Length: 540
Image 1 (cartoon, rainbow, N blue to C red):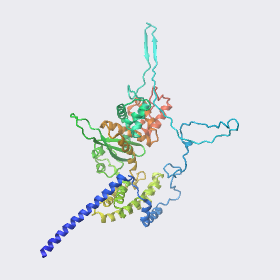
Image 2: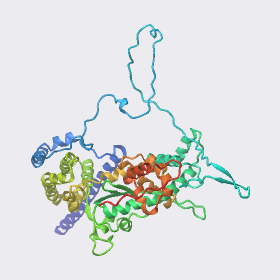
Image 3: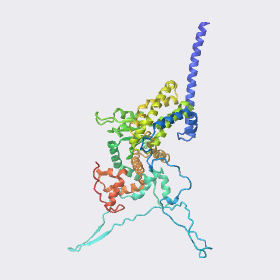
Image 4: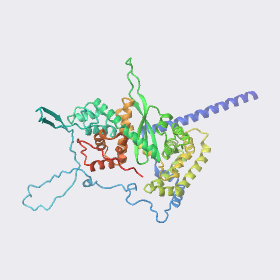
């Protein structure tokens, strides 16, 4: 009987252990299902009910706000925000928009009363505004080259001469630079595929097939590559912080000799933001450490990225040019840290995950308050107010992780991510120029993420690299407030005359000054002969 009891107890222990494992597996599957269900059927924005969150942790919220207010008291004479600064928070406009303040062409329609006109004195008009649209359209350019007839006095022979044709970036091309720029902006900025753009142009009387557009896009992107390479070289040499992220794209496979179909290959676009100077994209076939080291080789500043393992080689020093060089320092993204707590809060409704969201939200609110401050002032505020809150957050995270680390799930992953990345997450406290999040890189990748839903894939690796160059210049134009279409049109006309060792002057960062020197030299940009102005003096 005793032997039987021992045997049954052992069997019961095994069954109980198996039941606990199955129950935990069920809970993990349920968490993943809830998270996937929300991603599929609910908005993808990582939002939470802030009011409910504040009610739930009213005491903790009051404590954090009191601490942040005490620590963030402005020193005498130091402004909290620059008056009139564009980055300062602005109230949402109310009422109807003032169309009269928008710079655009205006047409006036006067409505008269035939029964009163001529009989009563007209004292004025009651004006209101409407937005209208006038279709533009293609323009046929007639390139007329003067032909001259010369009669030689010595022998009376007649010779004919024609004015020299200006240099062109697209030799013997059908399309002028303005139309090339238009179709490139339509696809690479607004995500319109060439097949749809071809139908849109046909409505305006222009028959232009998508194959022709593809060839122009690849030719233009490859030709503009030296400008992007010059921007990337300057960034690696002078930038303070490089922020990067990546996304995948499909590459059309090469046809097999047998004619059998094969799936699309996968490539990757990396985006790099170099301070407020340049934005450039790099296409790589592989998403691995070798690709990252090739991109950042020789750079020794700060690199802001997510916690993907491919970046570990950079911080180990694998991309150094010499053993004496300093490897770059890692800066982590607090939005990625918050995302793990948000996923745990959505899937499990655990109070610890929601409290983590509240603590991180307090840091974001402080950072938003300091947006318009100079880097030195922001650094001073971070040391006074943000650093104690960060210290308190990690002390709390380590304490809670000790209780949940044995239980696999989203909550343990959230705390584990924060603790593993503690040193990199604290890095933004070291300098006021370092951003707290990598959101700018993710926003820059949105043009690719949105566009690939329309065009589905790139034709080849070469076409993807050409597209990366176009994405780079368009994003840099938007960064510096330039119109990308006008910029590309002008660069297409200027580049055939430009010295190869001065391509950096054609970058969007320097284009305003370069174009001013071109205009000052009274150069005929549209079609005339172009003479390159002298290079600017070197900066001290």
